[in-house]
Structures are given as C-alpha cells and as structure tokens.
Image (cartoon, rainbow over the protein chains, first blue to last red):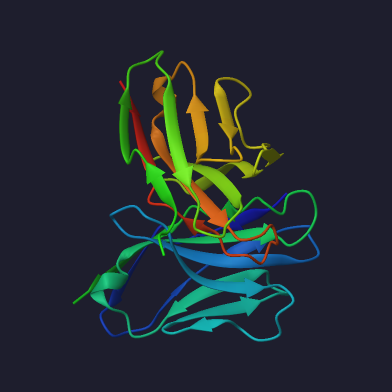
Amino acid sequence: AQKITQTQPGMFVQEKEAVTLDCTYDTSDPSYGLFWYKQPSSGEMIFLIYQGSYDQQNATEGRYSLNFQKARKSANLVISASQLGDSAMYFCAMRPLSGTSYGKLTFGQGTILTVHP
Amino acid sequence: NAGVMQNPRHLVRRRGQEARLRCSPMKGHSHVYWYRQLPEEGLKFMVYLQKENIIDESGMPKERFSAEFPKEGPSILRIQQVVRGDSAAYFCASSPGGSGANVLTFGAGSRLTVL
C-alpha cells in the first residue's frame, strides 16, 4: 500500500519569495512516480511536476522544482519567486510504475498556500 | 486540442435518484480514471478503465456505483440510489498509456450535490 503525508495544512509566503511544501511518502513498490498537482479555488486539478524514483536528478519545471530525497522518502515542492496566482491547494501524489496497482494515483491531504502581496 | 471534458459540471439529485457523470478523455488517450474528492480532502481513487475494460476497480464502493468506458463515446460513472454521503466532486483523468510514469490529465470535475 502507498501513503502520502503532507503535514502542512496551510502555508503563507510573501510575493516574490520562495516556499517549500513538504511531502513524505511510504511505499513497498520498488519503483514509483511522484507528482505534484495544484488546485485553485476554481476546482480544476493542474499538473505541475513529475519525478521518477529512478531519476538521478531532481525535476524542475520553470519556477517549480522537486527536492527528492529517496532515503528520507521525501518529495518536497519548491516554488521560487511566488506570485499571487500561486495561491491554491497543492497535492502531492504517487503511483507505482509496475504491478497491479499502477493505475492508482494516491494523493496526500493537501496544503493550502496563500501568497501575500 | 481539447483537454479532458466532464459533464455536467454541477449536478443536483434527491436521495434515491440516479446520477450519471460523463467523461471524454483527451484526444489520443485511451486510459481513463475516476477519482472522488470529499470536502477538505484529497482525491481518492475509484476506478481505472481502458476501452471496454475495467482494469482496477479497487476503490469503487461495492454497491450502487458502476463505471464503463465503451468502445464509442465517453466514460460514464453511474451512481444509483444516491445518498447524502455521495455529495462530492468527481474527477475524471486520462493518460495516453498505462505506464506509471504517464501524467494523468484531469478534467474540471463534476460536483454532485444530493439533497
């Protein structure tokens, strides 16, 4: 079974500052994918970034980077130069890359990020 | 290039009625997933389908819920005899393949309210 834990119910950051959203995971799968999604108040789910457990380098996508520490089972999202439009709920998720449950994406509880001007 | 299309966006049903939620995957995507989001919670997996096949339905409630993805047409999530606890946002996602590395693209969700 897979489990994702996001321990920060809410985070605040000043515009233009960087912020880190925490995510730890637990799995018995030998290989897995880690994802971050953003859910603004309008409700849609927007994909941000992906990291494979086999990837040697941390993933980056524009202002988003994933701080992947496999030994610690953590996959924190770093948002640089925060913008007001970054205010949203952020979900960490994971999925096995093989086996019978590879179709199942497991989500954490989410972190609400508020960016102050 | 249209994304994942879900309809209706909002649906109101009275207890005991049926709810049908539709999902058209992105063009070129043959894998469809349904998730449910209760208020203040993350998304919970319900079912994973390919055309005419249910691959994984381990997250589906045993009764009243069913899903299909026919050869032609959208995927349908059907909830019979709805109860208040079924009130939630139901998200559909699609991917081009079944690899775990494939990113799931989500639709905007269908919000079901049961009176």
